[in-house]
Image 1 (cartoon, rainbow, N blue to C red):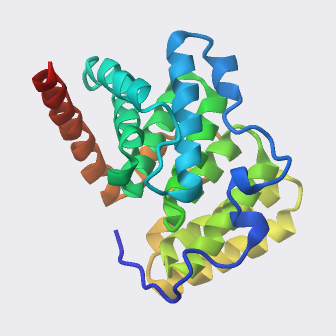
Image 2 (image 1 turned 90 degrees about the vertical axis):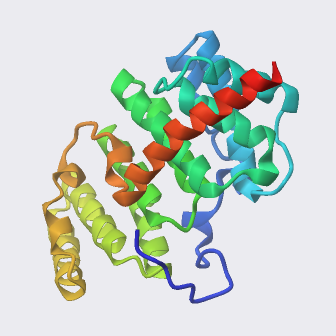
Length: 266
């Protein structure tokens, strides 16, 4: 992935409405409320607890555990004992990260969240996919790719208004971090939303801006990425370029390491 040039000491640009964390919004909706509705099982309860703990951590990214440490350690062990399962593996890693937040890294937390979003899409759990894709962007707010993926997941679900908000968020973050590829992707996404909402002229203008920017910055290949323009699930983790490949190898390897550590503890 490209290196980003930090132009300011601020983490993100000043844009209170687009970039404010949901826990800082007075009277905001309860994030993750679809989990128990779509998955009324023991695993669903575990997922709900994890979601809320991770959400609390993303608001501050401090060393404070936002849940029951011993319960998280037990959940880590229970999930990792299932092996490299597409649901249990990222759940186990998240539980371990949140049990020891001082060692948690935003890159790893975001990756585990997007893996769960991908799993949920494949299982037909649209609300869970939306929740964890957004959670990945809260975990790594300066990586515009996660915001683009969250926007796309929402667009696939037909939530065009919220998708537009997330494409706008992604565009602002991409400008702030000089991420040209995500600027193009965000503009293309906003273009599709405009067309879907019955404003083809506005959509055409945004698409033209994306084309001009892509040509100016030498990233025209992005214009051919079909996943940006289709209303079907698209395995979001596969669109993180090199990070996806490295992340998947790390995830599987980390599962095995954690399993070995847990066995050694008895």
